[in-house]
Image (cartoon, rainbow, N blue to C red):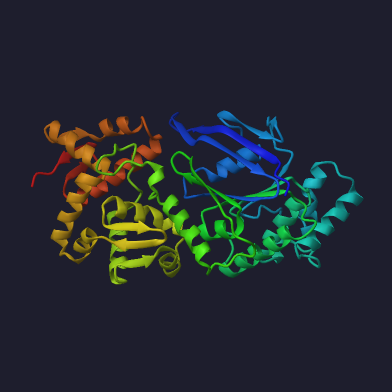
Length: 427
């Protein structure tokens, strides 16, 4: 198998300037390579910078520091060896299917006759023959995404970049397109040498990829590289498939020991930020796990509630931080403390929450300690100034808002919105 390095990402960091002039770091020191003959998945939750990294590889945005090289040459603009498939289809509604597919070729100055021939070939390859003259409004979501695939493949790029290409589709359509993509990939004559796909769907990553890069969030850092040594087509029911899924869940939820994350009881507010979870949300998740006998499968419960797993992860993180749940692979398990919390009456439940938050939620602990040292009163701006040293202005505010929500519920401290003052509660 040709193992040529197509793209090298070398120590790439990317920052944007926020509305208040603050620096928002999205990527931090990313180093990876993409090779011919393989599919690579960039896996991470919201805030991990997956799409930013993909656009950096495409040359659509430049890194703040570090370099991206295509076949050994540093990029200084759009990557000539890539083509992109977007989550939102991004079709021109006033153009027919064929005209949409020809767009990239027209931009490259390909003659009309050759353009038509190549477009019809790509349309046929992707299973849309007969719809050449149709307009996007006449097509289903799955068919529109097929047009997106054809528009990218007609350019015969070295590297096909896909940004969550199946997430806007219904489950059955998405599964059908994944299967067809794998059939095309393994067949002779597929017009691209490599694929890089952004996803937050763990099973999708294991199903499609040869290598998975797991990104941590805020800012996006490379946590792990996982090789998927499974023959195609892959069987979701096999023990080897399930083992890889569980391993990636552990990495994505931060439970793997090699991540070196400090324990909540010992961490600083910047080393272990508070998850963006309300007390009601995390309490509801703990209750669901309790109702189901103390253990649930995270993908199953997400499907049952019609949520993306990505939406539930902050609640999982919050409950785990407070030692109400623990995560093992894709399973959520109730802890003895979680059992006590969810079965107690309201007042006792609040006391349990307060004790756990005071000791295991770093920012809540810091606020309680600072208020105790300052006579029980401090302005919120004091904490925001400290938080802005490790977070953007928006993230710092979110951290404080979450801490206030948790502190108020546990009757640890109160916040006066008019004066902007935090006050220590005295029991």
